[in-house]
Amino acid sequence: MNDAQPLKSLEEWEDDLLRRYPDPESIAIGKSEEEFRNYDNPARDTVREFYRLNHTYQTYEFVLQKEAQYLTFDKKEMPVWDAFEFLNQLVDDSDPDTDLDQFQHLLQTSEAIRADGHPDWMVLTGLLHDMGKVLCLFGEPQWAVVGDTFPVGCAHSDRIVYPEFFAYNPDSKDERYNTKYGVYEPNCGLRNVHMSWGHDEYVYHMVKDYLPEPALYMLRYHSFYAQHREHAYDHLMDDHDREMFKWVKLFNPYDLYSKNPNPPDWPKLRPYYEDLVAKYLPATLKF
Figure (cartoon, rainbow, N blue to C red):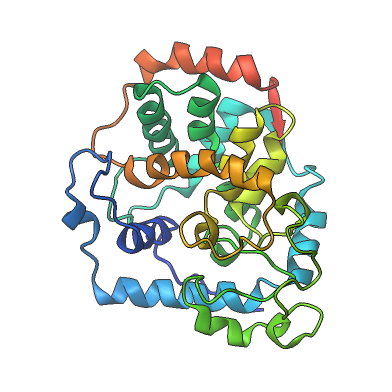
């Protein structure tokens, strides 16, 4: 399997999202919409290569393999604050949008949510939403950690980014998986659907016993742009999914547009977040 690293940093994928889904009502501070959309052609090439790998190798069997490998949560166990330090090993100087580390980006997201008066569990969701990127530190390639997510085990929508690369995916030629519903039933509900593997699915399972259901939808589907932006998989969703996706759509702008050059004042914020984490999460998390 090709383990090439096509992106200069994991954040290049997020930068590409800003290009694809610019928001004139952006909550970002310190950058105009035009600046977020200012990308050169080489960056686009690295994103295309990323999605070639992602769309080639994210098969139904691959996802089942990764679920079996990682959802046992037997790799590490540590306090939440140690987990953030672990995540910060992913800092990359090539990120064009911010010099802040992973934890500071998460703080910016959660602080933007808090500033708008949302419930404290949603603030915590902002703080945790990229925690699953620790998969990179377990040796997973970028295409199995970030990227727009999509259902596996059924036909790939042409509204997924770079759909032409699914031609290389063996599932596209497998009669079990290449029909509209594939291994699923109409409107079976996303709880019965396997999503492409990455940090969304991983962090959802990590904290699913501790947070309210709207928070879990935010974590599990915040990269499922083919649905919450393109509505490509209505045929798999049930009424409960549609109701919960209101929360996913509420969360999405805070994820995309909260980057700004001003570092959060962590010493001032620390007591609030220590109390918040203690309110919802156990003393240690399993990875």
